[in-house]
Each structure stands twice: as C-alpha cells, then as structure tokens.
Length: 380
Image 1 (tube, rainbow, N blue to C red):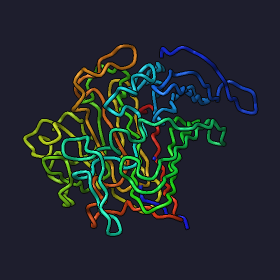
Image 2: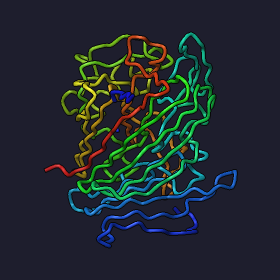
Image 3: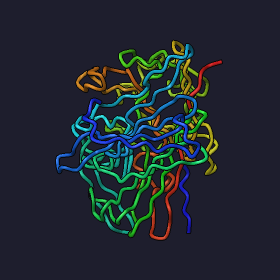
Image 4: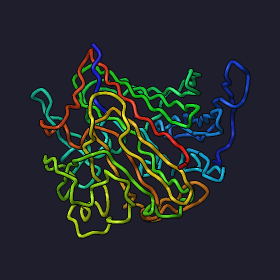
C-alpha cells in the first residue's frame, strides 16, 4: 500500500570519477571527489551535479547535505547562493544544519516526547526543553550511501540511510532515500521516500540557507518573499505550536503578496519576539497532495528568483536570526545575523502531539513519499 504524505573545499582530492551522459558531452554530468574523513575513519565524498545550462550543485553524502548551489545572476555572473563549509569537518562540528537533510523528524517535538499507539517515546532534548531536527545525532550527522544516476530530467544523486530501531529514541528500523536531481531548466528536485518496520513518525526536509544576492555577507532583508498561505501556526515561548491555526491577515506573517523580508521583521509582535525574527510554520494553501508553487523569493540586486514547489502542507520560514558570526563557512566567511533564509517544506512542528494537525505517522507496509523543488531563474 502506498501512503503518500502531503507535503521537495579545500579537501584533499583522493579520487575523481565523472559520470557523463550517453552523448559523451561534459555539459551534464556528476563528478565525485573526496570531502574528508569522519572520526570513525570512514570517507565522505562530494558530488558535483552540472546541467546543460551551466548551473551546478554540490552534495555530500555526509548528512545528504547540499554544500553549494551555483547559479547566474542577471548579468550572467555565477555565484554560490547557499551557506555551507569547505570540508566535511565543518559539518561534523557545525550546529546550524547548513544544507542538511533533516530527519527522522524535522522541526520541534515538545519536551522530546510523543505517544503512538498507547506507548510513550522519549527523544533527546537538544533545543531548550524540546527535541529539534531528529536530535543531536539526527540524519544530518549520518553517512548516507550514494548512487549517481542519469535521468531524463538531468543528473541525479540518490542517497540512502537505514536508521536503526530506537535510534535517537524513534521506533522502527527506517529506510530513507533522498534523490537530488538537477534539471536542465535550473531546478533542484528533491524526492524523499521511507519505509519502516514498526509504527513511527517521520517528517523530512532540506535545511538549505539561501542568499540570492550571491554575497554571503549581505543581509537578506531586501529580498522580496511570497508565501501562499492564509494561515500560520503560532508558537509558545519555547517555539512549540499552541495548536491554533491563525490568520496571517493584519500581521507581519502576511506574505501573500511579495514583501521585503525586512519591512516588518522588527515590529512589536510577540511571535517575532519569540523567534528573534521569522521562525514559524505557514499553513500552505491549495493542499491536495500534488506538487504546487508555495513560495517565491526575488533578490532585487542580482535579479535571481527562487520559486519553491512542494506537496507538503507546511513551510517553515526562518530568517537567519541565530547566525551570529561564530560559524565560519566557505572561503573563511563568518555567517552573520540575518544573512540567509530557510524555506523548509514539511509537516507542522510537533504534529505527533497535535491530533488536529496532518498526521506524520508511518506504518509498516506504507511508503512515505514527498517531493520539493527549488527552481532558479532570472527576473525578466
């Protein structure tokens, strides 16, 4: 039975393998290189996907993590529009989830506990009094197995991870896959699947940090954001949803029309105070189990546009409020306050403890399956 959830270096080069298309051109290929070693001695790899349009995406098998996305601006200059590190050591020690695949449960679970089929499960507490993003050793801290592929859409990388029964407190052995496909129209398509041996909860997402200007030192406050959502889920002081589904109308959470991120971010609003800016889940419109456009970002300076498509019911918009310069990223750049944003497609936070929210339960014999697309273009 198919169960579809509503929901998309300086490292020493030890080896290099290119997987080219059958036409033997180098325009559309995957390159594999060393990305460093893990504490247990295992090797991490870095895969570069290139399409016929000149866009490239780098992904490491450690955490199934997007390391960079390089796209052109309105003048044809290509720049990296995501945050990350130059080698795997940064991801081993990092705490900001740059580009990572998040699981077994993205976002927060209140007090690190949930009940399923009459049994209470206890998860690690790693965010105040709550559990966040699957715990301190979630999917973003695991080495995935990788399989480069060529598809009709473009070069693709399929990554697989088997999470043991009881890992980070979650029941059931979960086999998860995430496939990243770089299409020739400059879209990064992310497709997730998972199966389990016991009833469990699941909520997967990608945690890329975007700065469309291509300048990682520049705040994202001038970027124009649209979120197709009439409602959002307010949170308490620990950033756990109260259970209310509130209207965005008349609040700083109204992004139904493109609005500069910085135009209302410092208003005297309790929800903004709690997250030190935007860090909330929006209840997306037009939920029907199919992939549809849910959000868009337009950077006035570069002309770059990012459109987000998903079949998920929720979107967590985070405005980089906890970046404080202590995280030194690619090329030695310190990532500072509000210099990047996240658009995490997902189910709502703390859904296992909120019966009114869309279910995140996965049972044996069912397949969790969801797609998100990040499509890049230039404003015309």
